[in-house]
Image 1 (cartoon, chains in turn yellow, orange, cyan, purple):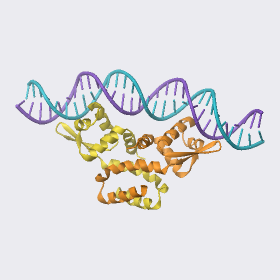
Image 2: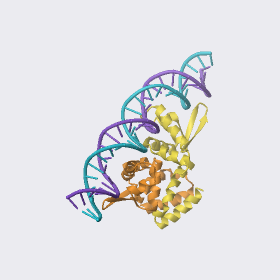
Image 3: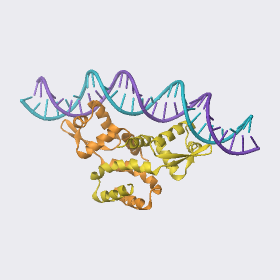
Image 4: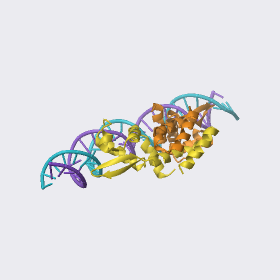
Amino acid sequence: MTGAEQMGFRALADPTRRNILQLLANNDMTIAEVADNFQMTRAAVKKHLTILREGNLISVQAEGRSRLNSLNTDGLKKVMSWFDYFDAFWDERLNTLKDEIEKDMQ
Amino acid sequence: MTGAEQMGFRALADPTRRNILQLLANNDMTIAEVADNFQMTRAAVKKHLTILREGNLISVQAEGRSRLNSLNTDGLKKVMSWFDYFDAFWDERLNTLKDEIEKDMQ
DNA sequence: CCTTTATGATACTATTTGGTATCATTTACA
DNA sequence: TGTAAATGATACCAAATAGTATCATAAAGG
């Protein structure tokens, strides 16, 4: 229920941003590299990356004149953890497993 | 990557809708009952419920002149399953547990 | 230095979104 | 039957979104 969590959900609402995350799951990428995978302009991709960054779903590391975007697993986990609220609606075995996952996520 | 999944993410983007889901996790509710929990008009709540329905996150059952809204666990699970794409970024133990959860979700 | 390359930032636009106000429809029941 | 209660639906509005085009900034390399 944190603010960052909220931003995470907002960031995930757009299909382009979800696709970007899946790209970054394979390789860290510069903005230009990410933009090569879409029809839209680099500026549009940059906006999406900014929103993903604000939602803590990616992190950006400057490297010379380029910036490498990489997946932020912790942010993804935090968004995922929102679903824990609905544990009571899942079957018992699932519930037990999820408890352990939560512990691992601290 | 289904259309319904996309609608699910869109539906979850709004904090009011996430709150509605958490309310419905406790009790099935009519529109009027849900609306009592918010400042906005019943019409606005109705729109949110429609979007949640389109995202398969709730189901609606007519009962006389009222309609009972209830959580759709399957829809929630399907949205959650999008995160499976990032298994490689989670630690191994977490990964194993998630594999079993996926099996349970069929 | 000067040019190229990579990115940042801003102004502008069309569409979507979240909300209100209002009216229509359907059902329970005295 | 006819009235109240619960919901459906539609028109309208302000603000947010997703995109473009354009210009500014910063770092590498010759």
